[in-house]
Image (cartoon, rainbow, N blue to C red; front, side):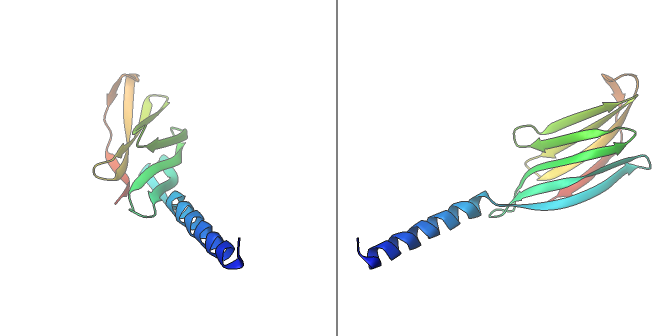
Length: 123
């Protein structure tokens, strides 16, 4: 193989590798939201670099309810329960919005009073 052929092949391989690595990249946008005086959510939203569409959100709850969560296209809802409380985190794919709500559950976790819906991130 001539030097010219090897250089052309190397350039083509580098272009394909750059294209594939560019497809895999995602932007990470941090967020921090207070759901009330005693509950905070912090985390990151991952966006597709080429389309800007939301891929997932991961984070941690701290306060009266504690735990970690991830929501994405395959799992659009997460719950974390605490004593008499339930934290709901949702990903609405059509509107590209991540939201959370802290519900009070005075009797059982299955019978809760809905709290105020708070947007974590929206496109």
